[in-house]
Image 1 (cartoon, one colour):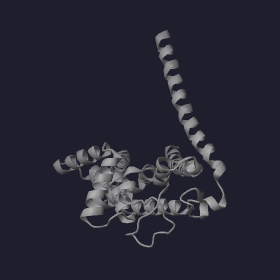
Image 2 (cartoon, helix red, strand yellow):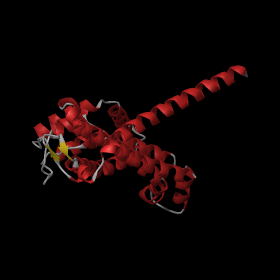
Image 3 (cartoon, rainbow, N blue to C red):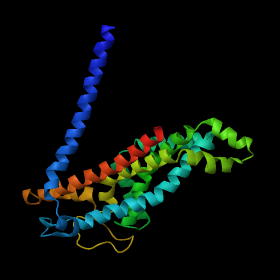
Image 4 (cartoon, rainbow, N blue to C red):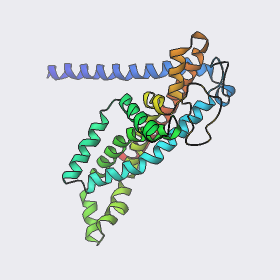
Length: 273
């Protein structure tokens, strides 16, 4: 009994330690950069070689890239998850499951090299918004498809059997009963995937991002600035004169990701109630 109590206190201490460490990191980054927030910081382009001005092109590029990524990856990921859950009990389904699981463990730099070789060079998209969105879509696909499959597997079989008993076909059961029942979990998975790809640097750096731009993208073939690559470029190239911009950009990126994850967890909490 005493041994169980000791282990209970140890695990509780470790849980609190991890929690407060994460909170400290988030708060430190946010408050270290939030003091640089201003209207001009959000609405102006960089000036004087990144030492002045704002980060509007990076903000716009990040959201354009995220929008295109979700536009591509969400339909494919959800349909793949539906196939694995409802039709994947065969050899092809098992091979597809292994492939998606393997993709989940691939480092982001490998996705970046893949996107550079296929989309930027072979298909001729070069460094562009389209190349970056396609590369990030490949990254987001395992997250969305796996979470969709788990969400559908979590739906009670009694619900399926009730629909079949009323004469519904399999496609009707899936798209009118099972998918709506798992809708909240699927939305949560999409939001988590969005938070993941928004913070990626290596794939975007190799396929979509430019170092410095005062022009906004006019087509899918144009390169963009993004928040993560903007932070990386300033930290690697510039000295103390531009570090304030990197801190402010990092603070904004953390706030956006926190908002996305907060919405995802709120949806999950409502689902569990």
